[in-house]
Image (cartoon, rainbow, N blue to C red; front, side):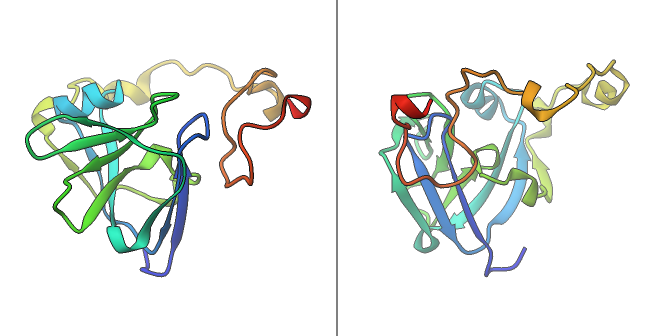
Length: 161
């Protein structure tokens, strides 16, 4: 990843949006129990952005002090986990799933393997549900999720829904 790359992202409802004018460092998957609880998932993918290159572009972040050193940022409206922050550091960690284009960032490492699910290696052997015939059938009509790009206004006016 080059330092000239730009990224944007935000929460599921669109109340909080951010932009990174530069690259991301140390993309990794953390398996620690704290990240599991904070994400409501088996692991949390993260990468660091320089604070100088990071900017909130919409809304306010809610914070939970998860330990003496770390606070976790999330959308207070929809609950999306967004940041893992060490306030005195010159960087902020972004949850990779909150990026508009998460597939652009491939993790380079894993951490805290002691808490990794022992059955992960078996996932590729599980039966796979068939995919919908088209993308139109993939998302419910009443979807209120913010699109994966910046918008001038959100939420849309009721007449646009």
